[in-house]
Amino acid sequence: MTAVATGATLQIRDATLSDNDALIELAAACTMQGEVGLRVDRSPDFFALNRLEGDVSRVGVVTDGDGRVLGCVAASRRRAYVNGVERIVGYASDLKVHPKARGTGAADLLVRYVTDASAELCGMDTPVLCTILAGNRPMESRARGPRGTPALFRFATLSVMAIPLLWERDETVAGFHVRRATENDLEAMSPAWRRYARSRQFADARDARTLGEWIRRAPGLSIDDYLIATDAAGRIRGFLGVWDQRAFKQLRVVSYSPRLAWVRRAINFLAPLAGAAPLPPPGGVLPALSTVHACADDTSALRALLLEAYRQHRGGRHAFLTIGLDVRDPLTAATRGLLAQPTLVNAYVTTAAGSADPREFSNLPLHQETALV
Image: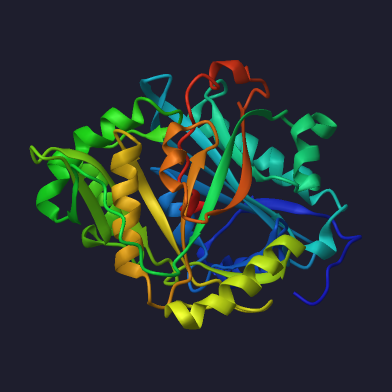
């Protein structure tokens, strides 16, 4: 996009496959500002991520008078656990406005689109989850519900922890055996997921069939990318997927904060000595792996899984392994001593009717697949 007709009449509509290239360009133009400034490369298929966010999804675009795409937003519906009970929930994501079109009213149109889409997909009073990178002030200001748009109510904070894959670690966790999963494990993985998901807010409700279907639909992911932790009796106590997402999403570094610039220098000094991948300069692709469906009965099980993922992927093309957990989640202790670098993401809830009580959702830790953010 080289120009925006700021005085033109804005229009909102459902996105179509013909918008794919314009949406990829839009995503590349929108920087996520945090301790690491990032731009997302969603090629070759912008919609691949949205299809994974729910059982049904819709993407809306706002265009100018010449039909140029100025912004987008997505709404999806899925079944998840809320306070231990399976129910329908909504998810709002991908609110992006081209930098040259900000202040034109495009964002308000997109918020109204996602509100209407959520009402149609889920109902007026169904909880709708959304996340905002901590420190993203323009988005945080929208939580107040300006100009009649729905208010957002913050109820949790996620820590997306990037674990550097540096030197070898000899640590083991007694009582656990970790191995790769196979299709035959899905039936046994299902009750382990159910135990975990019922104790977390907004964790997907999945059985063996729907978990397997989701994995098969996810680009670049297969069942043998999952690790399983079993106890001495052979019972599954946890599992997680380790996902190389470059088939449909790459994160390109725009800038580092002063603190992370120092961390980058330290890691890149040690990387050749440890046989590890260096961190790129601004403009480069962040060589990170993402975890997905990380679940565990306790901290020890998750620690065993993370250590095995670390062992299998250290020394390859990736510099980091990322995992996102609620800052209140006791499982965060599993990352201690792994030099994890946190990025905070705040979680909000609303409804299509524009109201929600955050206290209803704050009594359990949030589970959100940060690989899909």
